[in-house]
Amino acid sequence: MREERVKITTEYIKLDALLKFANVVATGGEAKIAIQEGAVLVNGEVCTMRGKKIRPGDRVELAGELALMVE
Image (cartoon, rainbow, N blue to C red; front, side):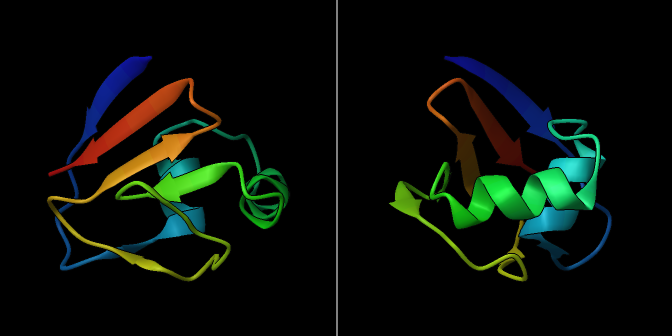
């Protein structure tokens, strides 16, 4: 699994926006589909909420291929 670090300058970022910000998906629609299909894990648990607040220290995984460490 590939790991990347993503630095945010705000208190939090919404899950769908994080996937776009990190260039994991090209559009918000792609993010929505991946999240709804259960392909996204937040801190090891499946998350189907697009608006989930992701804060520094959280780990987001996509389909077992990519892990984003939020700083």
